[in-house]
Length: 157
Picture (spheres, rainbow, N blue to C red):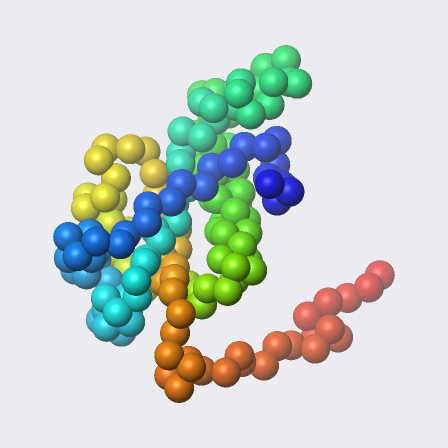
């Protein structure tokens, strides 16, 4: 797609939870306030970033002489790039889902350690955001909340 990441690193990983068995594994990981709506959603996407994204850099940045160099033996650089770019890709994910007409309910109220135990099968991922996907009941979906006007959120220098 056209949605960029730094060095084309693409650390986003997604687990789509759709089955009753998957939802039963997900439910105990959720904050109480997120349980009912998540169990009612047809799909919940667990958006993660992969700490080992940099191992794919030779395939993703073939134009670079040493694409793993900025990350090899540098766990802080790995984590920073994965978190930043994985979160950027999460925003792209939500925009893409909305562009095809899906309602999206992003949330952070969950236990990351329990998600990892229930879903990651030893992969070196970290859960970032959960997003409920589907078509909400128009009577129950809140209208869009106000947005800050330009002068309150930006400065032109």
